[in-house]
Every structure is written in C-alpha cells, then in structure tokens.
Length: 166
Image (tube, rainbow, N blue to C red):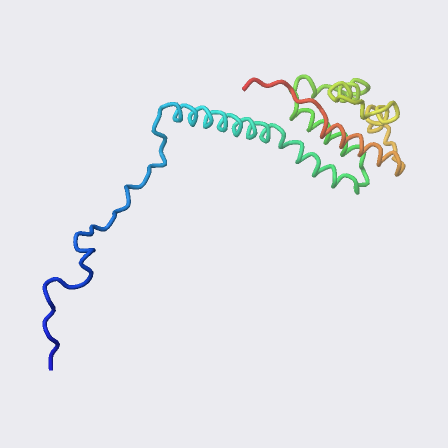
C-alpha cells in the first residue's frame, strides 16, 4: 500500500508567499573616518616612544642589578673592604665617564660618591675607610662592615644617572 498523492497546495496557506529574512552584512571593525586613524597613529607613536624609553632606562641601569648581586656576595667575604672598593669603582666607571672616575683615589673618591647621590651615604668614618683602609689593611668590625655595605647599597641604588641624550 502506498500513501495517497499530496495536493499541490500543501501546508499553511498564509505562509505561501513568505520569504525568509536574511541577516545584514557584518559590520567592519575598521574605523570609517580618518580622524580615528589619526588617533590610532598618535597613540601607537606614544606607546612606541614609552616602550623605547623603558628599554633604554632598563639598558642603562642594568649595571645596578649586577652590582647589587655582587654586593650580596661581598657581604660574606673576608676581604670586604678591598672588594667593596673595587665594586664601587666598577659601578662608578659604568655609570659615569671613565676619565672622570678612574683616577679618583684617597679623599676625592668618597667625596665623588657622596656628590653623585642625593643623600651622603658615606659619613666621615666610612669615607676614611674607603679612602685609606685598603692601603692600611684595616680589619673591619661587624658594625663597620654592615654600615659600609648599607652605604654602598644606598649609593648603588640611589646615585644620579649621567645625563644622556636620546
């Protein structure tokens, strides 16, 4: 047995001329006016400039992190004063011009360090230790060693940068 044939007009007669609604074309995310392109270009320039400045700042100050890492290893060393003076000299040469810092010895050396920092980290006793302690083979007490290491840490983190033109 088979089913009877379907009539020509089958289903709901009200939907006979119904055309299904199509969705519109997708909206572009690109800006349609040149003003937004200008705003995007200016923002991209500022972000690029800021990123470049951060990179230059990091590059110029990477010696500080290296110096602080070496300072931590010096704190347990027996020849603390000699190694600390060497570390401060290397850091100063990295931060400033070599002719300005390399020949400094004696009293001008701690005076230079104090001059390049906002606060004077090396007082009279510590300045005398830095200036003459290496040559006299002075043995440091624990309190002098801690004060000297603290002053060196303050100088390494807080000395003013030399003016560079970008």
